[in-house]
Image (tube, rainbow, N blue to C red; front, side, top):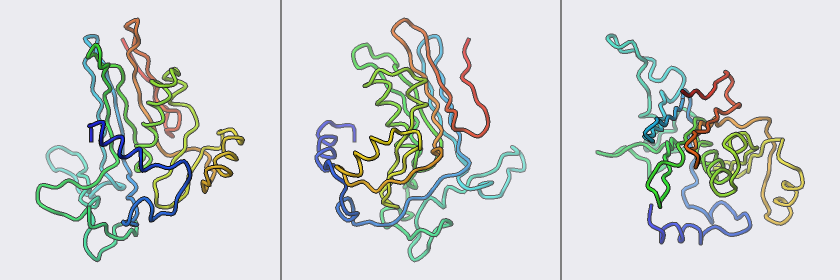
Length: 230
């Protein structure tokens, strides 16, 4: 997955216009939403970085608590698909995600640390909660911060898009300029739907050239969170 040739091949499969679902995959099963997920990022004064996502999956996980540790066990086995059995969200099973020895269930969790390829030092630590919207939220934030040179504040707070293939609809936050939406519908044939606020919540830190670390905690989380430093 990290080879340039593989990335170019994936890019070659992406046309400029939306296509029927079968163009992208013959596996038309749905993606499992995640619940009970949180993320934390940290960078210390020596430049060491941590990006960690944790989740108990559905509400209260397995509904079982460790008698010694007092923690709730997750139910991430439900992330696997089982033959002839729909999961807790009513989605049909996906053969690529069947339970097998030494196999992990499919997950959207994407804790990420990005390095400067020239200096070898950490440039950015980022991650998110929000189920299947995690990947698109992280990608858009990284693109804005590192390619468009926006501040970490603007990169995280900017309105987002999301399309997870099933359902075959592109969500957009209502703060996206209407001229962009009209352009996507008219010239790219996107099926668009407006939402008040996306469910994904991003946490991000960027190490600046002057040595300072800039951070932002997504305002989309229902409870207030703030970046902290020393």
